[in-house]
Image (cartoon, rainbow over all chains, first blue to last red; front, side):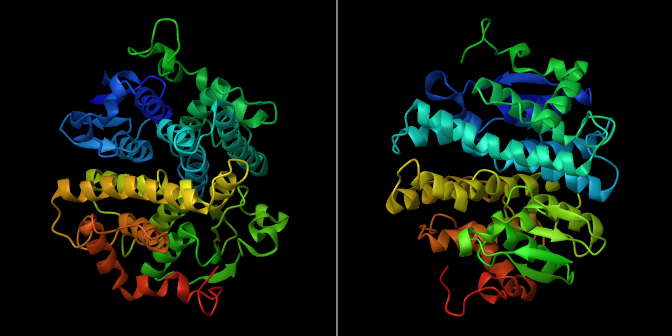
Length: 220
Length: 220
């Protein structure tokens, strides 16, 4: 498989986590979101991914896949073990709702293209854009923390004895939240799940800084 | 089942479409998003849906479900016929990617709470907010139209001989697009799928104007 990825993209990070956890071999094809006006806008990439967003995954038979949550479901169907969805329909609905609360209602609002639109034409400066990001992350984390609390799960994972789509979406969103200086102290349940997941070797291998396109000293 | 719904919410509209198509009986519990500061923010509703967003679905055994796409997957598992997902993994990935391109990258950007934040504190007036909405709808529709074109599907549906999650997300998004005056002429494939889906009696029953909480003469 080939994963068209940018080291710092949270949607690409989700797919890396699932591939690593399921031990599916893949090659990274870097798509630099900032260099040269953005490689994701080039015709060759848009021929794969019509939105001009990362990631895209090309399976060995040539199947082109995109939208990280659609890729997660595809990988779950094709590589069911180890699972990233629990066994029962109710638990699966819970895990998917948790993942979607981040993937739909938090992450798209702090996408690069949205931040650019906020800057121009809307004229929001860097401070205002930072507040925007932290605002939506805060609302999303509050809802996810309350989902964990209500469920009264034994922990440390959000649902069951191992990571699921919940951690696959949570870990990259917490990475972003730290980058933007969010106060994480109100979310002990999220931090517990994040820590447990990141302690897994597969999760550790997928971190942005360990990707082939990550700059040596961090930064953009 | 009980569906906590607002007649004009596209996320609630998606769930109504799936319930109607699968002929699952349910009662509507209206949650008025604009009256009295927004009924979705009341403690009784947030005890069901921790994000304070509609919809929420309560199954007969008391299971509380939310996030429209997680509800669609749950209904697909519990009521597999008639299906709203195709049979093969690749087709399912295609349909889910199409649905998510709208549900993640278009709809959350024109959510009520986002439009309110654009107004205050960001100071975007009604015109600027309208341009914002049409901008993201246009990008999303362009990508979805190109997904249909590439696939070279026989039509009129996006994938296969009947509606799928693709139409379940597309029909409400086109309803919104018309409301906001988007030019839809560049999207013949989307319009064809929308027309075919809306011609189904189950899809017709789920339209906003036919819901118990819809005002007699339209409007907010």
